[in-house]
Length: 423
Image (cartoon, rainbow, N blue to C red; front, side, top):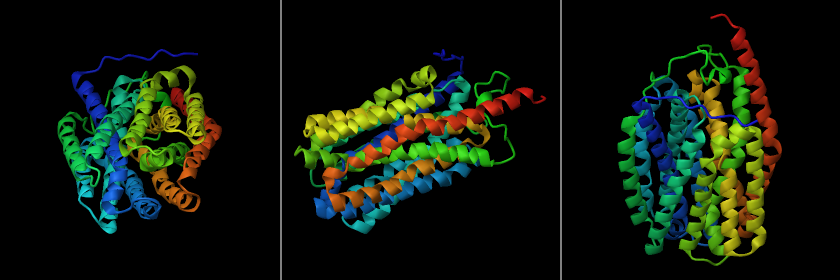
């Protein structure tokens, strides 16, 4: 049965907060794919070209993943204590600046150190913006998280294309691309950080509150085992999609360039098209979830991902590789928003903690992923790389819907208890 999305009048400051959240997600996506589309030139700058450089670059990518997971988990308590605004403000200014030193490094250890810092700020900002997005959702009383994540993809597409163009001009170093685009994102952070909601900017509670059915009713009592298990289940779902996205983000450009003998710029655009497809999918994510249910959307997304990877592997040309990347991005589009929105709505008082747990498990894909990919590339060659996301997303399509049924059952039980509780 198709549900109608509820529309609720909201004040102007809430609309500004929504715009700020859009811009924040756009920054995260932009920074992610500035890095991804600059990978080949960054490797040339460090002398990590070809198969001999795969191991060293894999360790740097692992450092980014370590920082991301640590930042996602560490920032949760700060969000619950101080609110999202101060955390986002600090991270939105520091994160764009952190990529600039990577344009000047020439040694492995410096590159690894700055990569960890880049990842730390990325994980912290991602968790903080998701918590702020859930806070904005409460005023609208309907799911709008997929729209926020769509701007992540839009930012990645636009700035990824810009970085691809710049790396086509500067083929020996990412100093100019990283500096110019990092400063541009710093200016964006200065603008949107002024419109964020404070910790106590929350809507008045009512019996018809959109989140009543999703709350665990644990306010003030701390985490419960049941809620933690739900967060682990949601994080496990996110893990598979993050590992697949990580494979494209860190190695997609090299795969297209080396396997299909294309230029660096064309290979970078293939990654940007992957992000653009994810943007298109996220534009419709909220309505798809309302019409068909979260579990069905996750299953459908997993199937599309598998089809995209099969086309990339067996197509044998740059054209089929780019189309396969597009299908993979389209499939990945709605998985993360559905997981994170469910985590944040379940217990609003501890939204930062819950989103931090889910994001930490998800970002651990950036830890396991680079290590696994490095082993695959080193032992079996780059041509076998795309079997990794194929397997991960195949498992997600198979078991994802089963994992999502448990949270729905828990929500129903809690909603029934809330209806019978005295005021």
